[in-house]
Length: 147
Image 1 (cartoon, rainbow, N blue to C red):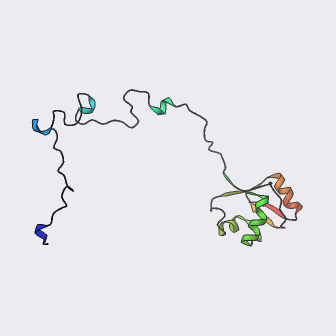
Image 2 (cartoon, rainbow, N blue to C red):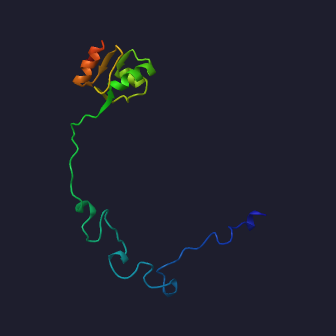
Image 3 (cartoon, one colour):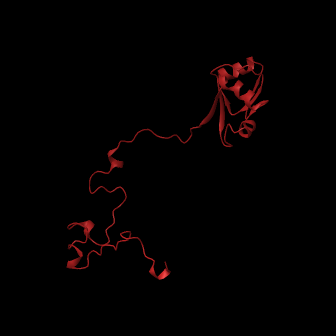
């Protein structure tokens, strides 16, 4: 085997079909079908154009809206707290401790909700607390501070 006699495997390469170059090239329309806008040179279609049919973005109804004032809270229920405090050895339930332990992202807004019970006597420094959760925490001997 030498460099001058190397060539691709049999049948692995094919020359492209040279369309629109006279009678012998296989038809007069060069693979573009018959007449019309799409057969012409320089044809471009706009995004979403359906050839005169009503486009899908105009056929579908508009529904609802997204409020620009919505606050997405990272929610913790009272039932989860004892497990998290024990697992991560948390002395104070604050945003920094939650971030360090990988429970929230830096920009998350944390809210404590009142589903379940809390037994641990612990201080909370969070963004929001439901009324039921606040009463349960204070009944267990903890404190709540809103950040």
